[in-house]
Image (tube, rainbow, N blue to C red; front, side, top):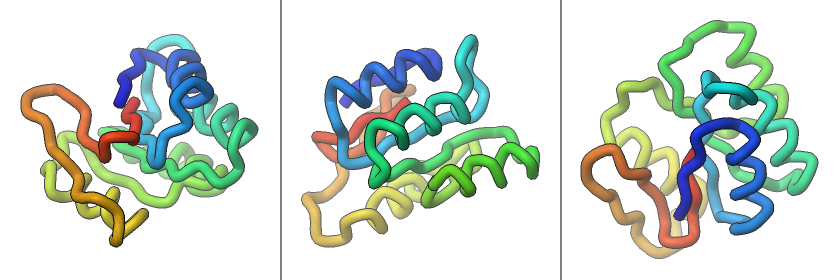
Length: 113
């Protein structure tokens, strides 16, 4: 599991770790979540991307789903909502471990950004 502070780092981490799932915020400093999604899908058209964002701007969300996002979780989020979204990706996979505080949630080989 890894965490990125901006869209460029998110793409770099994706290329390095090739995770099972990715969480992407639409609003990040520098390169945003839409940039990250475009680049991640260029690397891996089958990437599993969940948007986790406080932004509910319809055009940005439409762009995210048009690019291939599979789900959207509103921030601040209930950990169970994110866990449910991740579990839908691979219901038969190992259980998801939720970490505490501001840490990322995900499977042991998932990456959240």
